[in-house]
Length: 400
Ligand SMILES: [Mg+2]
Image (tube, rainbow, N blue to C red; front, side, top):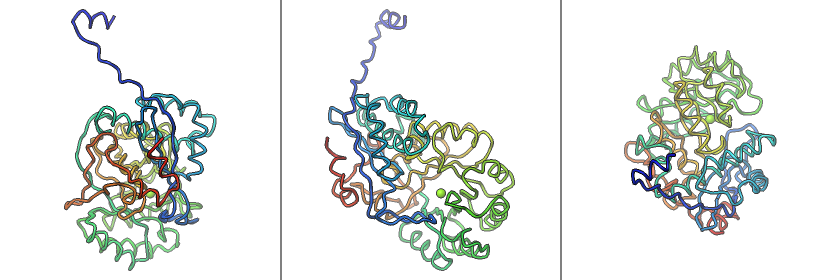
């Protein structure tokens, strides 16, 4: 009926985009410069915890994604998913990604398969953006901003070293927001040391900079519970800390809800959750002031945007956690443009897998902000020679 009405009014039905059939998906695990994560079972530089993904189409287009997982798991997941994505249309990211989710629920939904699908999804959005000549933010519905403040993410150190490290990133790199986390905080079982670190950090960054604190309680065998988190939140409030991240074990939803109600410092978390369905009880029950889904784990941009809008409906702030590679940061920047209340993106300066894989590294401006790329797709270009330093599979990212 609709087509008859259009015909009667002389309206021409727009042509559909010609399908871009997926030819292959390449996995390039990154290793050699893997930064410390602060975990009690610390990784080594040679360990693989991040992988780049390239989706090649039969007509020669390529899109890129990033996955937070051991590269061997990502490769195995892509092998398992291959019958589901082979020949699919790369210009339909949300439908294709949902197909991958729906057909693998029985194989461990939310785990490494979901992480791997994240990279595929980001790459499909990149291809769609390149094809129509628009940045992903516009495909997500529109752009609220052209730049966003990166916060500098650093591992905690003993007080004197913490002060020196923060001073370097503040004065040399121009950051005006900082997050310190993991390391001895909470793990040394010394509350005076915890407070001394925070005092040193506030001294170093000054009263005008933002300071966030990440307990990192998703680490193995986190030794504290609700009472520690409540006392520590009180201490942090005295130093003007702007959020307290992962103060409790990652499954302690009841304690998170209680802590959020009593804490003067906003409570943040969610970086180890995956799938939009998992976020729903955490958001609807009021576990977080700030939710931090990781676009390289949760299912990609298709899932991340639904989580971010769901958070907005529950008056929870969204801050992305895809900071571990240049491609993850690029995806976070597109998300930051497309949502009304995004204040920050997580960032680490000088990281091999962030600045060291792009043709043009990110630049922080004089006000401490990052420009959001407005070129088609993710808006960043990968550098083949630079990536070859970290992945023997670099060449396959660039050619079929
Ligand atoms: Mg964290």
